Image (cartoon, rainbow over all chains, first blue to last red; front, side):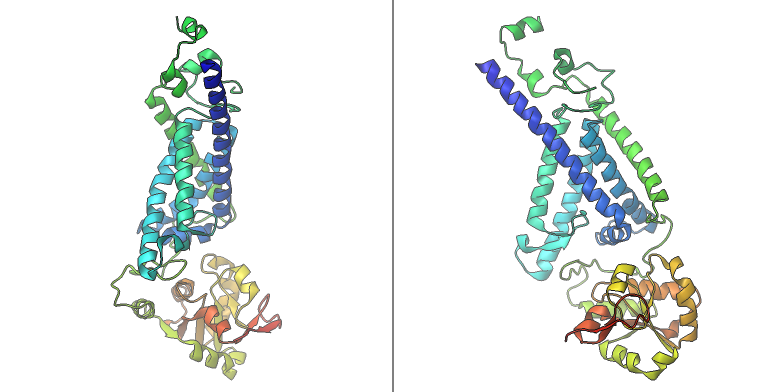
Length: 181
Length: 225
């Protein structure tokens, strides 16, 4: 009974993790494409965060980020280097969420409106959004990324880990990584 | 032994909860570094070959001098609260040696017969889709983010004009300032350049006509006041 229950929950978790991986991949692909198609608009939005003074650095951030997001999105959709990509998503999402939060606080204090009523284009690739919704979205994306980093979502992967040849995991010993090549 | 334990149902929670726990963290970090390196190289390459790619070495914001942090919605002012956005804008223009005109002056210049003669020129510093959606009738298109596309048509107009009025959306938009600085850099006299700070937003709010499509298309639309 216990074994079948735990097997069922494992399957459910695996399936959900694959869906989360596809969702993350699709979202990053979509957001990256939106930015890559309108690089000047994205450049203006990045500039509003006042992150760097050098125009070379500013241009590099605005030029690289959209395509990098597309790249990560494709890797997740295909299931290549999933854990490494998950690390990169966390590296991007955490500081970006902090920046968005700080900017929303500045807007809130300038306009004297409730925090959740703050709406602006954060440069996320989806136009103007309400801040609370954006923060919740980012929190979920970070959560999914951590989940993928923990090793879930390996079904239907082209190559879950680039380093898999070097290390044999307990899962591969069990033959549970069905679908992985 | 491990197989035997599984067969008799002995729990192995660590293997179940963290399937890759034996894979060293080092490998995951190495994989992340590989993803980062490959991603950055590919991104730079994609930007290079994309027709919309950014020129990394170019300063797209020549108007940047102690610029306050603006907001897409509302106004965010990180400078001391005593300075209003209008004061900040005036100070910024002064610092750049640029002059400004308000809505009334812009309308006067538009109705001035010298505009028809080419002694007064209007320059629209927004991108092409916005320009085509509606611009001040007779205004030249000059997107400061792609100046090379427009210099050939804009420069003769600017050289012939005695007064050049540049505008964008108004508000936080400083593309008209960037356009003015680009024109100044290619030899247009500074005293000819005027920034219409209210921009197209104020123009349409004041019920003045806009032209749809290309320059001198004759397709005019009067906006509602």
